[in-house]
Image (cartoon, rainbow, N blue to C red):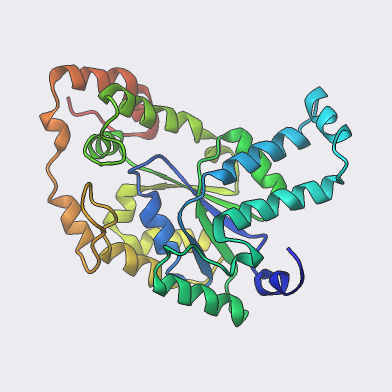
Length: 290
């Protein structure tokens, strides 16, 4: 990133906040709520390539024969190579030229906010994106972005599987696969508990008290306390199953009114869930009521 593009993004270019978690766990509402904070700019949608750049960085910086081989065969300096991956991660998320060209599908509100943040060198201090790094990718992203923060949001496996089997993006998958996806995600992101750069969050806490939830998040990110994220989470129901996102909704009441879908599962499905998700449910402190 060169010239005035570097100037426009200097406050936050090296300070990403990565939202991680499995589908239907609250990753989208968390990401978009963060974008309601005046010091944070949130990407539109998902940024799956970021985890791959992290993996490349981890392989390159790792000790041992493979890392040494990669470094010896690379004609770029180590510093330049990591800077190149840093640039790729940012620009595949926000666009080229310092991210000034936001994706055309972004809403006008987000577009205006982003341009104001960039053109006026506002108080934006972090950029936020949703990606899915395993522990290897996490180590690489830490090499690329030493100032990165990670937010892992977890939701009860019963609720996740119930949502996934009805959500258009996942409902074609077999019930067993839905269970395996949630259970494996708990193991995949377990590294969060072993680093001070990541924060484990619970979806039920987000729903129960968004003010307390986001006060904790903002304290962790070391940004000033602001009501924007909590207000967004209280009033915006993101992709409720096969419906469009609902603004000006009573999110807490809407989720409380939902029927416990697992009560409609067959005995075979209940046994499958218990067999596959039981250990992960116990690890995360969730009870299985059947």
